[in-house]
Image 1: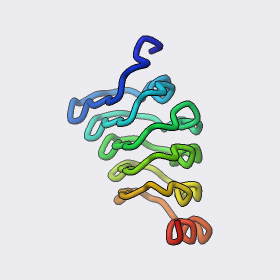
Image 2 (image 1 turned 90 degrees about the vertical axis):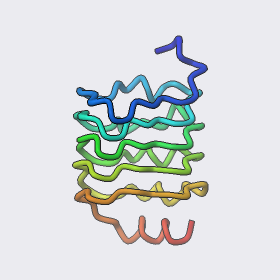
Image 3 (image 1 turned 45 degrees about the vertical axis):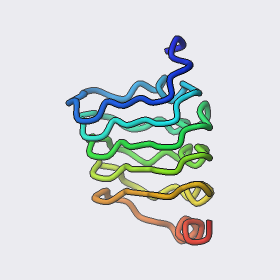
Image 4 (image 1 turned 180 degrees about the horizontal axis):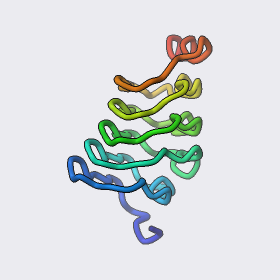
Length: 127
């Protein structure tokens, strides 16, 4: 996906997309918005999903049949304002690094089997 280095918005909501999200999407450093909500995706998100893209402002993967843990690397997307991961099969804990996202305005993770550690809870309350 090297030829997409000027892409700002990747939006394919409600398209019945199947398969896993290509990890190369998260390497497009110009992306500001990824919107793949309400699809029939599978698999988990890469743990290092934000290391190559510090500009990402909005991530909407809700209702997409994803599973696994919410990546620790999500806390590296320092410009994120909106995280919408609800209605997926995510398990485990909410990464404490989300509390470091000082520009975060909306965090939507309902209907997932997640727990919040006391450290992550404190980080979220006082960021």
